[in-house]
Image 1 (cartoon, rainbow over the protein chains, first blue to last red):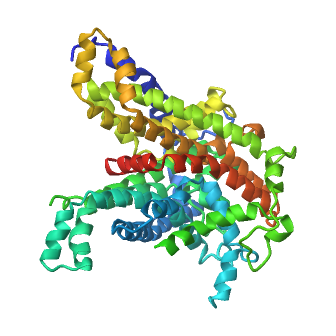
Image 2 (cartoon, rainbow over the protein chains, first blue to last red; image 1 turned 180 degrees about the vertical axis):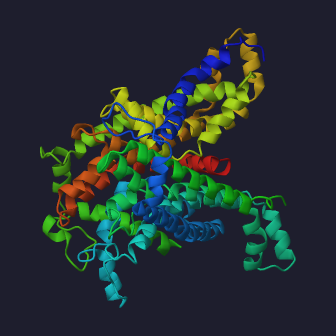
Image 3 (cartoon, each protein chain N blue to C red; image 1 turned 30 degrees about the vertical axis):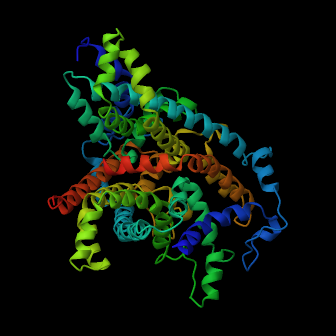
Length: 289
Length: 267
């Protein structure tokens, strides 16, 4: 391991430059901006202390956005944890056509959020969309799913589940394949049925995978933007308004308030950090077997 | 299980079917699943029409340039950074690595505004570099992590042998390490391509010239440009934008799955 002192740093230089200029610096600059009254196009601005954060305490639309976002994150967690897991367990039993099936579920994940949004906008269309037509044919009462405040967020959750299930399915499959076969064989010898060994072996051994899926999903959920932007623009009313949408509109559409938007960003960051730490607490500790 | 998978694919099939229908057949109920008579008119319209909004052809070119540029920049910077982190000993190594991994927890939304200000100050709004460099920065840390894991597994004897033959570190890196790492570099390339090709929020903010829109932004605007009954051109645009990744996916199915596995389980 003889090398010149500078060699490793020369290798690192381009990446570090990219990283510092476009990750570290913006992160810190955002924190600084959150204490100012910066606006788009305003060259001079002043420090205003905690004023932006204080204003967020009174900003009811921000509160609604935060609640909606939290609702989306929590309500989508169960389907996102359960559906890919159920599919992965079924596929892992050695279904024929496994590659085809896995690809079918994975395909939506290769689409952009805009495409996914447009697909579902068309499917969920209350008048000419196929979904309501088939539901009616089955005798299920229909409504304008996206225009009804009580269903709009659920419709968005549906599109997200369709979009990301394949990604988590592949991760679960990998986790399942790492569980030694002998464990199941031993359990079967002891007379444990399929359901029993699922609870006693599969679920506990998948704990690290759960933790990863859970944390990834929550971090992503709190930043949900594209689906809402395409499907509802935050409506009806503010029923599906989310934090990143509120931030986007504050900074780039209606008010061009960079200071205020930066304060929102840091509140969001704090919320995500708290949630992630809670999850680590919740799922860590019992992973050793 | 098969029925489930077919059901899962139906929305995507519906998009493709719709894109081939004559305009007057699109909104018909009951839904028609065979586009007959079929037409390519919607594709012609979004690709070649001179209309101000339907610039999918141009957006396709923009997305291609931006995504390939991002892939190149990510591969270059991440491989060069991961190599010393995996195979050399030097002061600050562990701190740098922890910083990279820790940055994976930073939500992209948090750096949105300052990144916009920085890009604007550089004069990069509505330019390719204004899309490529920030997109690469978003994927860089993940790339370092992925490649470092792989570089750690390479046998040290290969490097030692080359060193005895008088090869310097750059030569060892380009002639030995990189060629041995082709599978993982491929996985990272696909990952970076996908995230750059599909990103919506950053180009929505950083581009305000219609000629520079990448596909997701162009599609979103296409939607507001047409009345809701004109699904034909929108669905043609959606199909076109899904095509490159569909092809990559069909060709490199296993590699993508491997990439997701590695990224997931060791993240």
